[in-house]
Length: 118
Length: 110
Image (cartoon, rainbow over all chains, first blue to last red; front, side, top):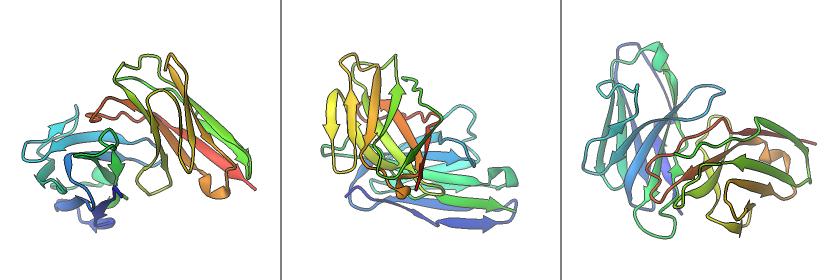
């Protein structure tokens, strides 16, 4: 149980275009989903926290107008990288905490999305 | 948020037991300790979580002393496929925020 999926797994786009990444909790409902970014050989960095039906909370230094987050349901959150530039190329990972059950304190991570902006 | 400190890297051989210790001196009363494993180009995978004393599951054990200022992940009889980065995280119920440290890069050799 506690499976999180992401789509697409990898995407290549031209500079200036927008890219949407989906994060789904497949077998549980999640009130809270998290978005991370990871550069090569580095640790995960939290970008934002999204709660179903409300605006996301962004970490300091993360541009909310550039990284649009929508958490429309208890099983789906999306991250849209707007006007992507080469420096946005990274590995984006989402995670979700189960709404109920004994694993409420645990975050479960998706497989990640590799974004390459040319 | 409790800051964690782990060794940057560890080396082991197949079949050995590996113990990775994490320091979290300013852990709060409500904080849980969770360990994740990450392979290259994959999302972190949950290994084990605990609050105090000892927790064991099918893949690992987690030892937490009474003062909870540190914890040790124990991997019995590692194999080559256990080569990965291991992260220790500390957070309260609901895990409103998880701060990833540098992690420990474990290399298992034949």
